[in-house]
Length: 331
Image (cartoon, rainbow, N blue to C red; front, top):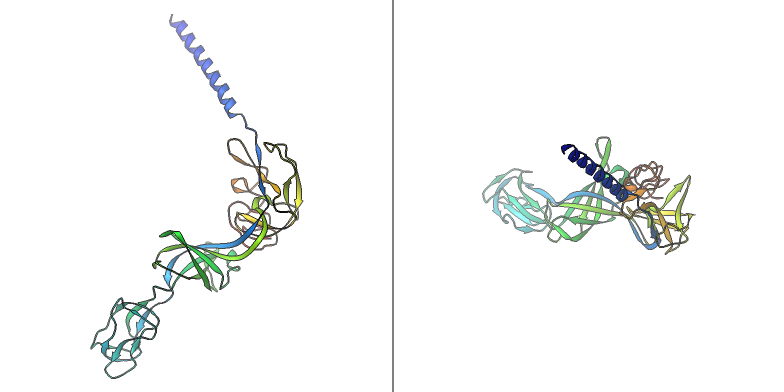
């Protein structure tokens, strides 16, 4: 009896295992893939360089005495707001009074009536809380595109629903090397700081180049064949795009941001183009034979940015590189 029970258990295990194997194979069977398409669009492209920094005061300095003598009268108190040149203290002998070096708030004051001070002695501190800036660090590959006067956008964690604007006021002439890579300080003055406080962190985007009403396509749509750039233009469509016919259209490109690239010639607005990607019904993207890229959008020798031959405007990042570059560039 036990023998027959054992045989029955074995048969059940075999039948169950066979059913599971067949069912799992059926589920794992490859799904039909469809091409990913996009269209040639018209709009604005803004090339930006990003960096992180913190909010600081443009004017924050010590208050010093230019004379030696005994203080006759202290005319201000701590936390008082003054203008540049305002008298802060006078001397009993009529010497030149101590004045404010710039507008701001008196944050500390270390003198009182009858105090004796020496020439060049620090007697307090003043900070301008209304004129603020953010200093960011920019990579050496991007610094050549940064110029004084360029506009910038600032995002501050403390004010997630607001965007602040600013202007580049200073670009460091010397960089700081770290692990073989140099970076340069760039100062952005904030136009209207509103309720920003010194010390808050900020993310800054500086617009280095901008074009309006230009044709553009997703950056991964542009491919390279030797020294020519081309886009796969879809000539016919079907319900699942599997029978769509494409032709290689040679294009001339312009500037690019981190997502799109300008098409100077070769395409017209509204054309359907095919991206070098595929998508299954399970929504899993695959690279169609372009090694070296992240997220299935890579091209040979891509350095992690949007690089196009012969240099050009800096781009963004993320495995959308083209041959011949270090990770940034335009046409």
